Image (cartoon, rainbow, N blue to C red):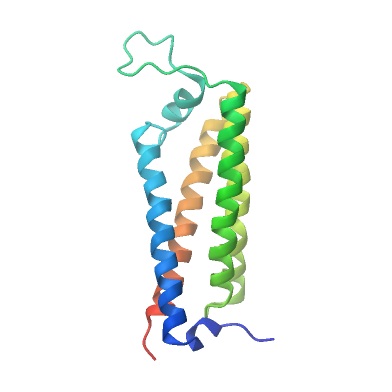
Length: 162
């Protein structure tokens, strides 16, 4: 079955439905990134501080404490599940766009590796492997770049005339 470019053949109302979904999904995704920015977790030191606390820093503007195991498991559980669904749905849409097969497969599969590296890295960092903060930062950036590219491709192709 040839599904490359299938999205281009959809009726206008299905394309509008997909576009609305991707726009709302993107608002949710990027709002989450705004939250990350508010917590100071966009730099390696901020990532570490957000999960391991800053009780030893007497100059800290905002006092943060090391997260407990229950809180860590809740954060990781909810994020891994929700991000998996986000990228499953977006990857499914991406699969029916007109793109080179290797690029399509990369954009659809890579986020799942980034999810494991990002949230597994957070958990390992919390357990004492503090160098994982760099892996968390790089995989989080990569995940966001792939999300942005995938959502843009889907939106471009459903809004394309003709």
